Length: 208
Image 1: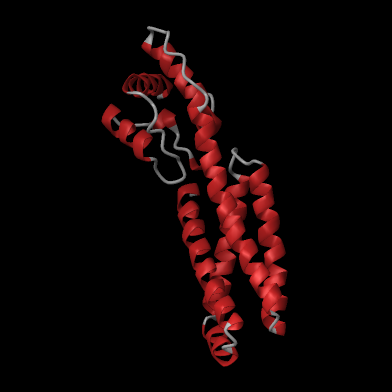
Image 2 (image 1 turned 90 degrees about the vertical axis):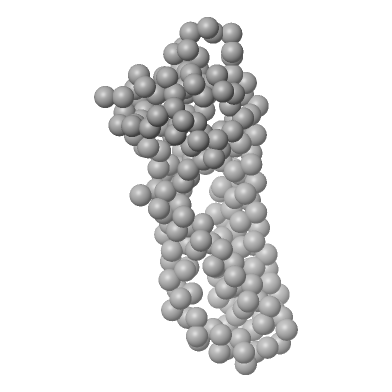
């Protein structure tokens, strides 16, 4: 469910940006007649995209354990931009419309910065490689990198995380997911081969 809505949110945000880029450009270029036609033509699709954008965003926010200050700034930008856009396009006010678009783009940028900061935080938290016990090393990796979403027992399911108690993937498949990410799960391609093997072994201990 989370992964599906993550994709819905991702593409609805891009469509939302495209719609407002088009409308803002037409307004700034004084193409008022064309703007009126475009606005009427995309009225229903725009409502659907806006609803998908906001509804999926709210769901992801409620079910995401990795929220930070940047997220709340992004949220404020989005909610401030909406009334500015409504008034700006209704009154033909170029300044308000442009400001609304800047806030929307800014919120998207903050989202990307937030993702990058999370990845940097993961990389900045080194794994202790001193343990010769594979399971203990796997537990260390799991606690630092995985537990925030999968939970202590692997079945928390936060942010769309899979239930590891029911995991049927082999080591190669798990390694690929860790390297490339999947759905809302970020890439952990900075983990060493021994760390991947260790966390894979530890995941095996969580299975029912």
